[in-house]
Image (cartoon, rainbow, N blue to C red):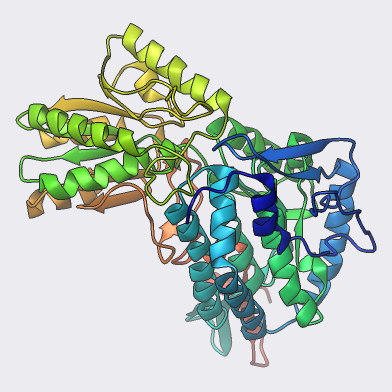
Length: 522
């Protein structure tokens, strides 16, 4: 698939997603001259979404106001009164149809993700595949919302637990995964009987509109209320309103630690529930027994994929001192080859697309200046890719120390900090000695080393991998991290429990009142 750079070409790509969709009841919105539609919203703020690849204007969206958001909550609450009483397997059937709808639109939506966010086309396709996969997972889950049965200490009593939906789930997503992270939350929440309101990033609103139009085609075909899944495409004030809204049972927020701290405080102040997926500062450890061919392939993808704009991006490479010179030499050679394949994300030869905007470029430059001032040494890259213009940068390799202030922070850009270690315990200590705790990995062929890394004295991250990189998590496992990463878990395993409330039930089927703990009240 070649470059798509002209507005008339992007119109063809986007037009099929722009059917009228009643995301708020009774409102119609005028078509623009370019064939696109304003998204439902009544604020005065209109955002033009432009591709970070070349600045091409892709479309316009009128942002939702706080008042729009509040009305959406009432629509969602009305839909919840219906949806919670639909049998869970039937809810799963609707999600199955949603997965099939995304299969139908995978190619076009994958290209739109690439255009609006800037990740390469293969990664755009992969992100849509995540939606499809989590729909499949949720369909199976709809028949497995299990509770436990416990043995009661009292005769003729039954003790068990069951799970009920929370109600309205608020979803705040980031630009770097403009569609997949929404689906992790929305599809699991849906089979659990919840309804959801999605506040996407203001940097990638068109991807959100496309997803919602696809979903609402399924709702319309099944005569379901639109409020089961709605879209509040607004500014930061909408996100703040959601966090403070007592009508919202759970707020699932993905983004920076700074944003997550604000959301957590607002939600906690009203005794609500929050699910936070925040910053990462992920490390890979290379031991003397590591298969370097395998390791460097994995590290490269994890360090430069999505131009370093993944929460699971490898940012620190902790290498045994006996390997450091070879690893440095080989990485510089690999990066020099990659630097020749930076370009438009829809070009099939491209391996690294642009950063999201000029502010991200400047943040990368500022981080590199800071780490050099702290004593770091740039071994390769780091500069803007002047011949391409726009938001393109050359991925950087930097010799640094783990305790440097800049290394301790997450910079959302392709900077790989390289540092040596002498003992495995020292390497594990480096891995753990940052405020974030999302993903981690070790490359080793020594069983004792891998088990040490996975033990209670090993990695303190929510994700710990052996002989695979820090990024590319499967949806079947619970995704999330510890410390400043927020502690949330999404997607697989038993992450569904975050979207439900537990209820402990005792049934006395006898004719006498027996108190627990042998208490007598006669």
